[in-house]
Image 1 (tube, one colour):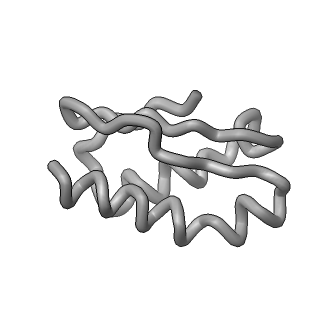
Image 2: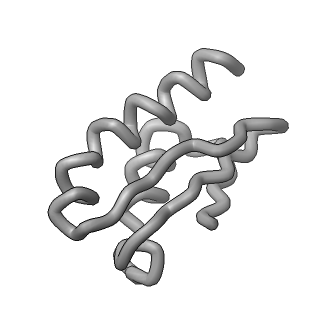
Length: 68
């Protein structure tokens, strides 16, 4: 589980330049029972593109993503 949490943090870090360009941010708040709760601030929270969820699901397809 710790490896999955670490991987999610790495994925979010890899998206940082995209998020910053859109004046947004994202961070992992909690990972428990294969569910990742991610805080997303700024305009990206309302975006339909779902790049955060897709980036995580692309590498960790069994993780449920909850964006707050």
